[in-house]
Length: 206
Image 1: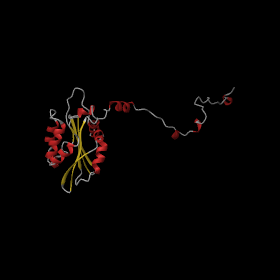
Image 2: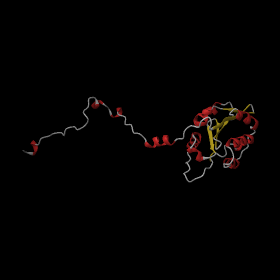
Image 3: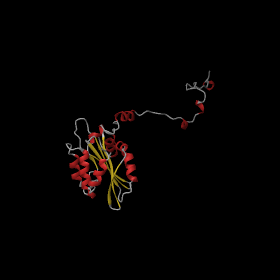
Image 4: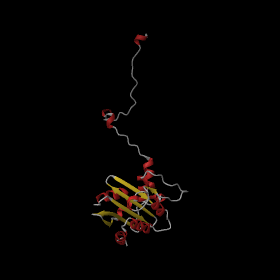
């Protein structure tokens, strides 16, 4: 047989010949890949604090120049995003400050002024145990301490610098791990000239 008479042929298609597959466009095919890291993050996320764990959830703001302290729903002690949303609804003259204390061992401060949000957590190590601390660390894009590290404050230490509490003083309070965090927050509120209003709001948490 001459070269010119060489047979032309195609190899058979070994693809999937199930009905309908040949009609699908590439854009119609969605490949789902599970992210093992997301699954690990979900497994690693701490369980919600219970009512017994939550010491207080309070918003403080000024309305017509007068200090106001408002007890908030306990659910906000487990969700930073929800706390930020709630603080945006407060009719404060210059935004609002949210305070959360959990198990008398960690506190979180959140300040919302328009689009600006500042967050401070008294103990980064608490992110292993409490959702609000984990949310704060994630919001701040900070690293979790490793198992060999002690706790330390993390976040915007100047969050209250313009209302009576310099950054170095807030950090010193946060590092006082022998004191109950609800007591520390009461001192912070007093520095902000919200002392009596804060005390009244705190009383609602029993």
